[in-house]
Image (tube, rainbow over all chains, first blue to last red; front, side, top):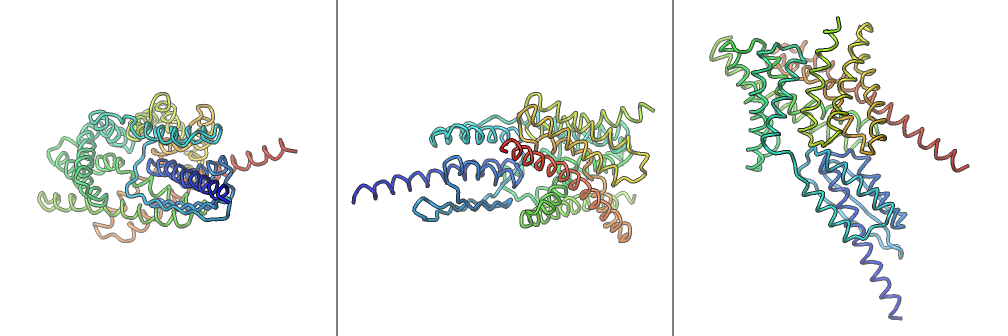
Length: 266
Length: 149
């Protein structure tokens, strides 16, 4: 009589570990910008690799819900909430490799956790490199959208300003709505000043180039993709998100444009 | 004539390269993802004779998606990275800005027109991506069914 109970407990322990590990893998993927279907599929594959066939996984951009049934039919559920997401394609690639390895080798959970930690601590580009990247984005897109060379040089400063605002607002734990307002306001203000002192020529091209850094276009495209693919809830969340980003950018740039035009009467 | 094609593609390349750093990509993926963006814009420009920019955006996206699916398999990385970066030159950044500016000026007609056009472009991009990825999935399913029987 003692033995089966003991076995059930051992099995239950394993199920807990399994659901924790799978959720952690899913969390890492989602938090670093993987698509909804990739997160759901990776988790499903991990469960199958450990012979759990009945799993329900529901992922939206802000939350992961998982339920699996243990062998004796007991449902085990886990909910994991996401508060911040960013795009780190290096980590997505690494976690994707890891989840393939898990499915191939049925890796021990301790090793998986160790690997996840290692991936989480992988270095980002340095702050200076990131500022240079933001500047180069602004520079290239200004030229790309038809600005001339002096516009593009102004855009370098706008791009750097966007990164600086994002960086310092992140350290203050400000929410992304206000961060976007401030960033686009700073970029538009610098562009208007540059045009006013006759360094730049086309304020609109400079501003568009600098604001590409805040990627409202990506948000719009990805919500369309989720909706058409049938992830309706995720699509609606992304739609709201992209509306918020676009609104924040519009408010920020709008304030800067209106104020500078009122001052110089352009 | 070549300059009309070369310079925009060069700008698209550097923009994508910088963006791959922002998205924290590493190694050879930086260059290959940026080449995808260049390819997309080249296709867009070459389809200029269609006189229909929604269609141009759609074809360019299809080209990028195919390129990304191939590259993802060659380098064994998720297709997301290539797609996200390569799509950037096509993404309607300008449209959003001009819509906002018309909104501030109070020109509702132009605001709606630009806004809807922007949504149309976004829809064309999404359709292009989904068309290719659904096809690739179908291909896989058919392939694995055939190998079983």
